[in-house]
Amino acid sequence: MARVFTSTCRAAALLLAVGAAGCAGSTGPLLNEYLDEHTGAHLAVVGRPLTFALERSTLAANARDYVSLAAAEVDRSGRAQTYLIGYFWSTIDRRSAAAAPADLTVALFADGRWLRLAPESRIPADLAASPQLLAPPAVAAVEAVYRVTAEQLRYLGESRSLILHIAAAAEDDPDAEPYKLWTDGRRELKAFSRSIAAP
Image 1 (cartoon, rainbow, N blue to C red):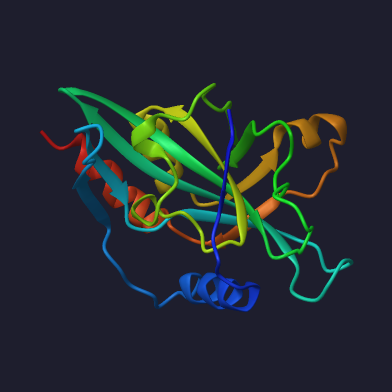
Image 2: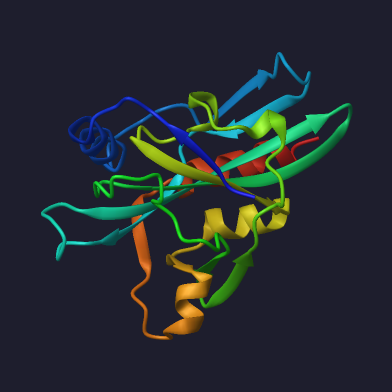
């Protein structure tokens, strides 16, 4: 199940934020941890998401659709589960919240290996979009949550090449243009994977 959330940030600020995050020299925490005050769950969240972009220059200058994937581990009463939190957003003014496809299943192609991710039917309360969970500064965005293994996160963090497809679009059109890595969070994802694997 997808969840739509909104922000009052303007498109210009959005572009600046995404561009700054994509700079090679940008630095920040590799991992953030906090206690969810509503559910009591302990969360560990990667310091920076993987953000993929698809150029839409035929619609407007600097127009892009984005998919951000932020890794998180949720410990609920001693039972830990890892996730990728997906955010579908855009710099295109569509005059609606529909910045995402109807089917939010994605397919990642990493170093010659496909990883297909289907969204959870419901978004857990402790993973609802928030700045702590690296929600993008988009005017309108759609959230989805994908259950993954620690090994899958490690593989993605260590991959040398990484692209993303909207699964339904790729199935309809094998030549569909992929979303290319825009903000490279592999360094942070690798550190996150090492952290949650530590005893």
